[in-house]
Image (tube, rainbow, N blue to C red):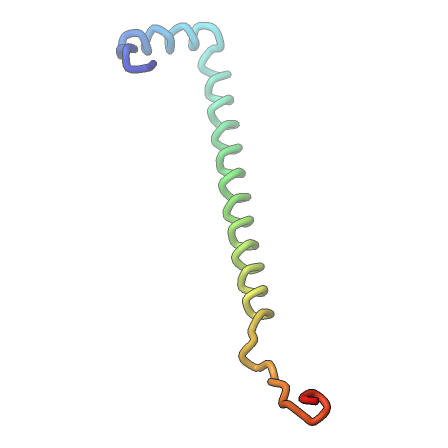
Length: 78
């Protein structure tokens, strides 16, 4: 779809956008967008860390190595 778009067409669209919105408004929009992306990334990193901690906690709870085995007694056998 975008393979037929040349650099000149993109420049014309850029000039029209700058003419409509102005450079100050585009600069504000760019900084707001950058802040939103940065906040999203930090939230994703926090979620990844919390998920990893929860997985570590669950794996420690599920340790069956120290579970005592039940020895057969006369009551259990009979």
